[in-house]
Amino acid sequence: METARKVLTGLDTELEWIHETYRELHQYPELSLQETRTGALVAGKLEEFGYQVQRLGGTGVVGVLGNGPGRTVLARADMDGLPVREATGLDYSSQNDGVMHACGHDVHVAALLGAAKLMADHRGEWSGTYITLFQPAEETAQGSAAMVADGLAAKIPAPDVAFAQHVMQLPAGELQTVTGPVLSAGDSIRITVHGAGSHGSTPHLSVDPVVLAASIVIRLQAVVSREVAPGQFAVLTIGSLQVGTKSNIIADRATLLLNLRTYDNAVRNTLIDAVERIVRGECAAAGSPKEPEFEYYDQFPLTTNDHAVTARVSQAFEKYFGQVGAASRQSASEDFSRIPNALGIPYTFWLLGGGTTVGNHSPLFAPVLEPTLSRGVQAMVLAALSELSVNSL
Image (cartoon, rainbow, N blue to C red; front, side, top):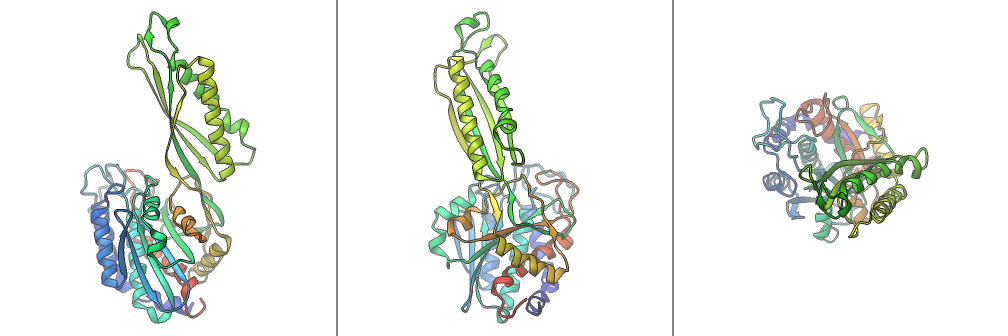
């Protein structure tokens, strides 16, 4: 605990630039894989703090701070904004029309930069290696895969553990942890089914994709209730059905967009198998002239926290703050876990309250600056010191 207090004592003197950085990030959000300004800001700060900096995955940034023997910790923040027009009315609202930090990634970046500065300024209090990873394109599930594909594992010291946090609609500054699944796996599927077009006056000459798609929609509604065991979590949403252009034209194809959410990879496989089986079966029953087409995209891995790592981090939080909340599983999805999974290391992902009155992705999403930012910095530092500190917390 004494080590943590020494490192975090300097936080008050750093808050001014952390707040300024947050406001700049919020004013200039960038879409997935376009985070050039954000990446440059992050890289400049890390170099100023004394980190070895490299760019990975296009717009991603990694900073490494070696500090003697010991364990290696990787802390991650995501950087991308959303295609949302801001309606908060803040004096630091987005200047990029139609793009907004509506999910708190600006909080994540500012908090990790604050933690990076404190860790660099208090190297006498800990030993090991601290890696800060600023990831692009979380919203499209592309960023973590891009950094892994760009040789992340070979370009950084091998981490022993990884951490990440996310701002949520919770009381400002509240921290919540949980072992096991914390965020669902998410899969989007674009399905194209084929019919035979005709005039509305000669339906007998067609294979009507409207009827085919309607049959698929109805049949898919039974997958969760009849193919997933009671007590298991699963969501199957048909978010879009597009077919036809005119009342007297029978189209030749229909497109359905599906989204799946699961906390268990076996359940995920059950849903995918059922979707493909039902679609193929309905196409065969309708006499579809071509096989259906399945395109999987925006695929988010399951986020499931390691028991031992989560216990150590929770204990560090409790000793410093006095208490920590128990997080409920969230049906939202993230791509963070793809990084520790690729590196073969355990991880934990916790929730940080932003004091917002609306949920993430709303045009009104506006975290309360304090204590949200301070707590985000503190949490990242405490998690790192639970692995790196010379003296026990």
